[in-house]
Length: 127
Image (cartoon, rainbow, N blue to C red; front, side, top):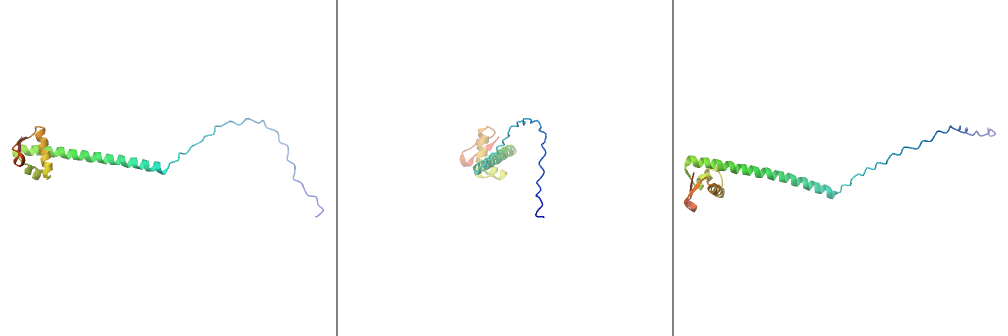
């Protein structure tokens, strides 16, 4: 066995040369992934929170204005029925503070929807 010749691998067959076609040039598409920093994320969060707060504030203001408008209409109806009202009457009827009752009555007087009789603590209001 030691005298046996070492076999060489067979030589590759010469292949027919194929026509080399120029490779179609495909443009490299570079997709740049934007880098988002923590600062950007924090800024976006703050913007969203501000938008949400603004939305809630707007809704709350609208609800407050609607309630005031409703109370003024109730107060006018009450004044028609009772003929003469006072700040105490308004507080009891609408369950509001003394200053809110004064503000309501003052607004109705300014707009000409109620008339004020008397001064300060003894003021009475009528249609």
